[in-house]
Image (cartoon, rainbow over the protein chains, first blue to last red):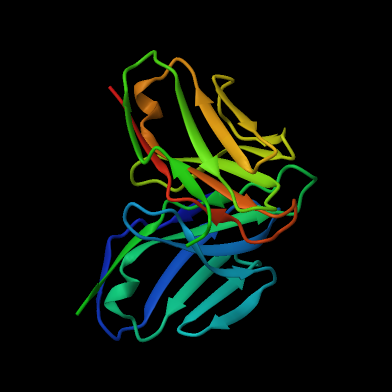
Length: 114
Length: 113
């Protein structure tokens, strides 16, 4: 079983819709949670970074973390065609020096249809 | 733009060959990590360097090695290339060793034939 599970999609929604992206994880040591956006032929770009359970909002993006269920979500409101990309969840454990590696999900490919 | 550059952008090698990929980080970024991203997968952690010393490694064999230089550049070397090494190789840098944002480069796409 992978440490981080993410539905690979693809997911297609009409412009203006609310998008929900999700990841589950099995490692209780994960304390830091991130969402990255990756456009085709580009490196991942950090969208959201959260530490504690609860919600964090940044513009049209809301990240939600539920540590008790080992479940994280990213919501995109008023989706735009420019949001079409692959979305990767990533996690990091509180750990000793030298082990701040990110463990990624497989990524969900999202297409916003104009 | 993240200020992290990688070269070359694309590379084709044959099985058994050796390859060197390069990364140039932002000035002041003392930590660099390398990731391998196979097609349709998320990035997998290869290793991390801090001030020219390797200080973290993922589940990759010793034929994957690296170097970090004082001028904020770094290299990933892969010996005895295998077909499964075909992937996008990403480097990511950050100022220190804490939880700051990691800035990813655009990657080098390696194809092994």
